Structures are given as structure tokens and as C-alpha cells.
Image 1 (cartoon, rainbow, N blue to C red):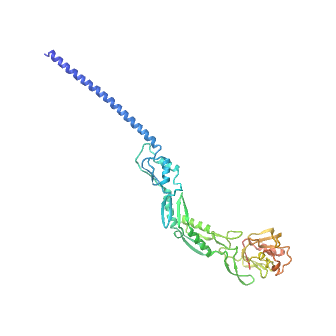
Image 2 (cartoon, rainbow, N blue to C red):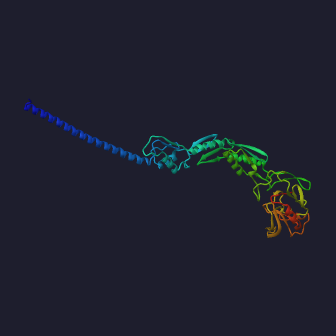
Image 3 (tube, rainbow, N blue to C red):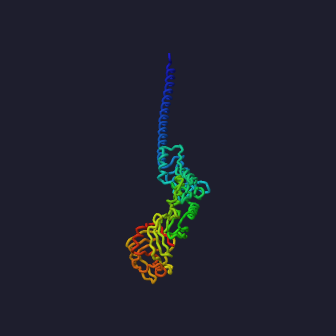
Amino acid sequence: MTSRKDYRKKNTQGSKYLIIAGVAVIVLACAGIWGHNAYQQHQATVLAENKKQVACNKKHFNANVTIYGVKVGKLTVDQAVEKIQDKAVNKLVYKDGKISAVRDSKLTTISKEQVQKYFDKQYTQLPTDQSYNYENTALKKGKSKLKAITAASVDYSVAGKTFTLAAKDYLTQVSYYSGAVHYDDASKLTAKLNAMDKEVKTLGKSYKFKTPAGSTITVTNQSYGWGIWTASAKKAVLSAYETGKKTIDGKNHIYGEGYTTQGLGYGKSNNGLGNSYVVVSIASQDMWVIVNGKVVVTVSDVVTGTANKGDNATPTGVWYIMYKQKDATLRGQNDNGSNYASKVSYWMPFTMSGCGLHDASWRTDWSSTAYLKGGSHGCVNIRPSKIKSVWNAVKVHMPVIVY
């Protein structure tokens, strides 16, 4: 039988256990509350940090981003533009047989719009360690283009001759920037084209010519003829280097002198005269018009410029009919300083100084010696009764040989 003392002892021990259990529950409850609060605080910190990083990433590049060889990690778009402009190469230069990549501070390397496009491509909501590398594809293409250009060669054919022009021999320095090729020094090419011009041009050329009267004389081209138009030819050669074109027809790049600058006589026989031309003999005061190798008009009593007055003498050489005009008024100055205005029915000028073929209704002296002291101001005077046949036979750009 349990004594009262033992019963009290058991009750005391039970109370202790209850107290301990209660305390444990309280401690656990407090710990749970504290843990929950700590977790919530951690989550709040993480969320705040994430928000901060998200906000930062909206304006800054990720850590491992390279544009045009320049690291722009953690920079804003504006900062990246400035750094790229200061550091990145933006130009290729071919010189001494080598292509080098350089930076030219005067050039705009990249636009803010382009950097913004790269930013948008690499953008992630949260930071990432992934690497992004955006290369200057324009310079890559430029390097390939420079290699092709400097390895190119073109055959330039003119007046039956062919000149081989290899780029490496005539291009001293070539650059590539802003998406285009720039020929910094092509002076050797210019010099070569000038040398070619001297070799083949007919302007100023002297040669033998058989007159309708049967004599063989030496004549010199004045305004008649052609030469290589160096500027046009150079442009064509450089274009061929870029496009890979292998041949150039030089007849498309010639020039002339006087009223027309297109160049005359290219590819024609008889030293470029062809078989249709006008011939004027000062000594005999004769004029012939030859068409397709046949004399179609002969005028045996023309009057040329006054021989004893140098300024009025008809200039010798090979010229050409610049244009034809009916009912013209010829104006100039007489030897005494007075002005004249002579009306003519048919006007065919052949020099820029004002000499030409025309009728002269005012002239009374048509003798073969009239030109010695009483000739024209330089023109070839033709009787009104004969001018129409001359007008009908003569064509614009027809050579005029005066001897």
C-alpha cells in the first residue's frame, strides 16, 4: 500500500516533468518563431538584393561582355560607347604589302544605337557570368576586301596596246574604315596612266599626210585627236580592283580638246583622220571636202587670214568642225580697234579662237593673193555661190587640215 509520503513524492516528480515539458514547448515555440522570423528576414534580404540586381542589370552590361575587343562588363551604354571609342581599333591600313589594324581618333568607331543593340542582346534579368563577344564584322569584311584589292590585276587596252596593271605595283597605301575603301596613295597609278597617255595619245601628234593635190606633208594635230582621261581611267582601274573585273576598254576613258571634250578620231585609220575631212591649202588658196575617201567639193578660190598680220593668219594644223550654224553674226575687232559685226548665212567654226568656214558676201577680192595683205581675220572665206555645197558636205566633228 502506497504511503502518503510516497504519493507526494510521485506528485512532485510529475510536476517537475510537466514543468520541463512546458519549458521545452515554450523554448521550441520561441525557436520556431525566431527561425521563421530569420527565414523571412533572409528572404526579404534576398528579394531586396534581387531587386537591386535587376535594377542594376537594366542599365549595366553583364560582367563578361566584350565589344570590338574592348571589355565593357558592368558599364552603362554611355560608358561603353566612350570606352570603345577610346580603345577599339576602327581602321585597316594596307602599306608595304601588309594590312594593319589601327585606331584613328578622328573616326567614329561605333554609334550609341549599335551599343544599345548589343546591350539588348546580352540583357538578362539577373546578372550572369556567361561570356558575350561582339566583333567588328565590318573590319573583318574590310580585311578580306583589302586582300582581294591588293592582289588584283587588270588589263587596260587602248589604241591596240594592252597594259597590265597589278594593284600591288601601283597602290602604295589603301585604308578601310566607315564601311568603305579609301585610296590614300595611288600616285604610282596616276603616274603610270600619264605615261600611257604620252605613249598613245594623238593630241599634238605629228604625222605624214597626202593632200588632195598629191603632195605629202607633215601635219600636227591641234584640237583634233584624243588622249587618256587620267581621272576617268584611274577611277575605272580602282573599280576593277574592287569588283574583280579583268579588262578595261580604254576608248571609254578618253578626252578631247576644244569645243567637245569627248576625244575624236579614236580607232580610225589614216592616223585617226578616217576617210572624211576638210583640207585647206593656204599657199594655193584651195579647199577640198573629202567624204568616204572621195573629193566631193573643190573650192579653188577661198581667202584665208591675212598673212602679213600674225594675229589674223589662219592657224595651221589639224582641227575639227565644232558645230554648224545658219544665219550667224560674227563679231570681233578690226586692226584699228573698231568693232565689226558681219552677218553670214553659213557658219562652221573649227577653232576656239573663232576661225571657221563661212560665206563672205562683202568680199570683192577673191584672187589667190588676196590673203597676203587683204585676207580675213583668220577665217576661210568662201564665195556665197559655193558655200551651200560646202555646208551640205561638211559634218560636225569632221577633221579640218590647214597647211
